[in-house]
Length: 123
Image (cartoon, rainbow, N blue to C red; front, side, top):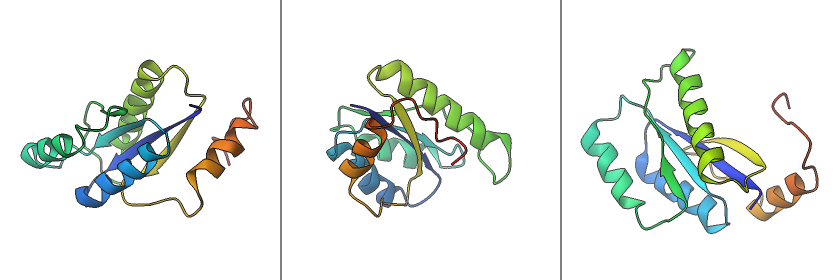
């Protein structure tokens, strides 16, 4: 496994569940940050809905408003959990909870595997 997916989720948790399952079905571990604005009961239902997928984790939650530190904190918390939980991950891919990739996931995996030392943070 070379690509781990960090998902930032704010709304549309049903869609986010589909997206997480899509990434996981392609062999990518997923760590999800759910905005703390999401009510606990809704969050708990979301966690339960994905409990059958072994390579999905949920990190500490932060309040996220556009342009605020919470988005960074959520991303960092999820990325740290990804690297600690899945040591074979070489690249961490940041995605929203509502966007499916346009191209096959395997193509992304192959592309990144062929560039193991490339840092795409600025790309």
